[in-house]
Length: 323
Image 1 (cartoon, one colour):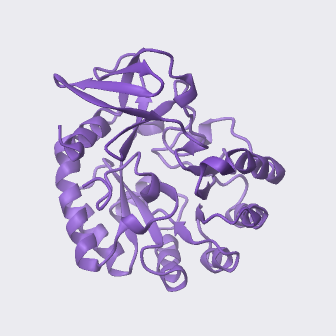
Image 2 (cartoon, helix red, strand yellow; image 1 turned 30 degrees about the vertical axis):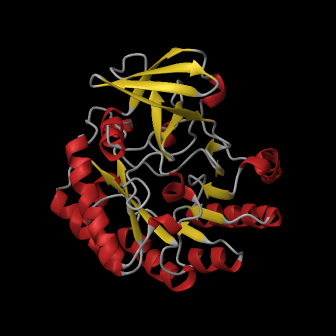
């Protein structure tokens, strides 16, 4: 099966059922985002130099058979696909991807983090985590909830970034931004940022993230491109919140026009959206074509990403990397 179609089908399903040899050493668990708090965890399956992240669910119709030593076979829709399981260094392969605060004062409707007993990691703990994985990673990625306030969270993340600088690895940061966040991160040597507008329209943003500012995120993105450059600024847009494909095409075009690479993230049904469906593979493939065209016309290239989601590619279809 062609990789792009296989991955779209897997992203539609979102999970696999495990059989064969134990997979414990390949399983990771999220502390941030819609999949945070999942008990079964997820793993990374790769084939031909491309990867996808899959949740583990005993009820899944897609079977992953682990032959041992990381060799694996996916069986779906009557076909077998041979590949390998990739061990996650910290959260994902090849990166130390760390959630600083696993709690959040905001209540975005698609995210279960506010309902979890998350904690903030100590700076020394984070440094130790990166040090333990430094021989297995080529980048550091930092994300965080908002433990008490946007300003206080930013200040703490800046301390974390300063403490990680001596590792000499490229650092990417994705937090909720205040007006000066891009400039402060840039001054510390951060190479990439991802500030998420999350939804395809402002009306949906107000429904899904009622306590946050749509305009504030857009302003942070505009100023970031001036500081970090094109191909170094990213923004998640969730697919499956009730938007149309035309809405997504419009917002991708608006982001690309200011030099921001949109990251299309299929909805993981959770929190108050737990009853929603994941987007279909047909829709994801159609949007991929639109996404690829918009990036090409804007001269933007996710293959240049050094950190975070566009470098990992596990959760999304990424033009230039998956195609």
